[in-house]
Length: 197
Image 1 (cartoon, rainbow, N blue to C red):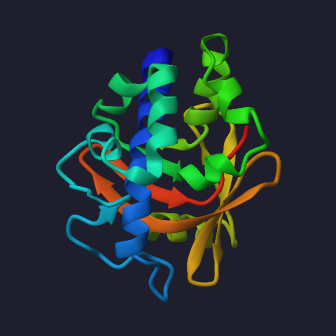
Image 2: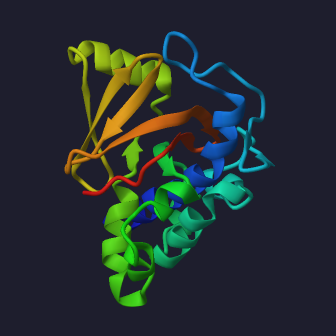
């Protein structure tokens, strides 16, 4: 069961990454911090469809090719095509490119599959948390919400002006650039940094 959840998380990450860039371009954060509803938003130059799963959408995004490659290398595709639901914080190609030189290449090596899986599943939270649900949790938490990831460690979500940020265990903060990219098995929020457990 643990392997299944991990696989789903990784797959969600890939799909999310692929889905998020287009969503950001078409579903910018509204004044109250939630994304404006859009029908079939574009991400990475491709239409994202709410009736398709995370993977089926992500593989079409030009902005999430690194995420998709990572999900495949980690063996999480079948998991992320599962029923979920999953909330995926999907880093773009630019977010992966900003990591220290050699980080991505190192994680994609077969012997680093377990480490790659940890990083990918750290971007996945069980449940379907759109921006409205995230903002409600942030308000209930007095300005921050603790989100337990599929990997097991926590992320901290906060409202930042009209948007939402997510901070990892090391104190690195990512901004949600495209929120509420709906999938048949969850929701993707595109982010501008890779989060590390």
